[in-house]
Length: 128
Length: 147
Image (cartoon, rainbow over all chains, first blue to last red; front, top):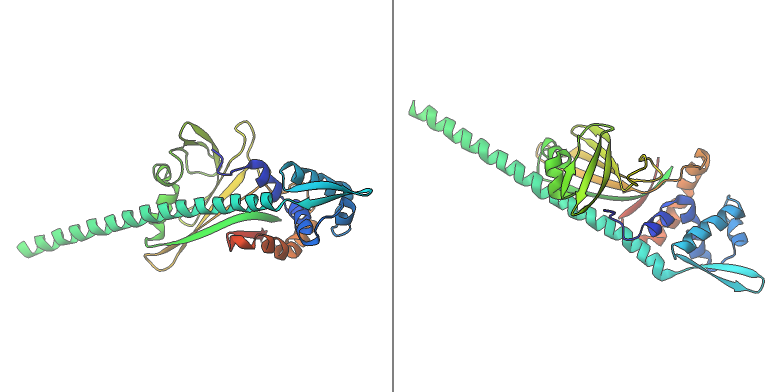
């Protein structure tokens, strides 16, 4: 029943502090957890936890460079995440359009019936 | 709190009462939303949305005729729906003259529960630009909403 293509993706990007970590990775390029923690007011442990969730959702990958572990964004997967949200928006566009058609048809029908009632009323008056 | 929100709206050539009925009456909801809707439109009421042979629970939050209606869905059937495990759908109806209504819908995702308020508020301010830049391709589909 879920309208989302991938719950893991959604929950990974729907949380504000994880999005901030993701933002930093996008703007700074490959970074270590230490490097990222220096830019945010959350602990390195919290940053590592967020990176783990992002990695689990496939949004982020890790590679070793010397003694450091660097994290970087997987652009394809990020694109997929944004597309999932765009699809969510498209679904609502379709639903809103269906609501519009139903409401406008109901309103048009009410007006038509009122017009018929008015005509009938006029006709009665004329015959009197 | 900052929340990831999908927000859309549409202009409808019908009075607000007519649009309200279309949005909230279960027999009407089954025409634009689920295949079958079991729901009492009252705050706190639990219902069920059928999508083919699948489905899921729904709980009504706000009912303020004819302008505000909201519900939570997409939560595990054995859990109590709250901000951390469900999606919140909010409809706002705004009359534009006697025969037109602006209908806006927002659907917001899992919020962060264990975050101090001050941190949330600071975040909401400073984060907006960065995230919207990343998701710029979505062009107004997504907003980060402080509240």
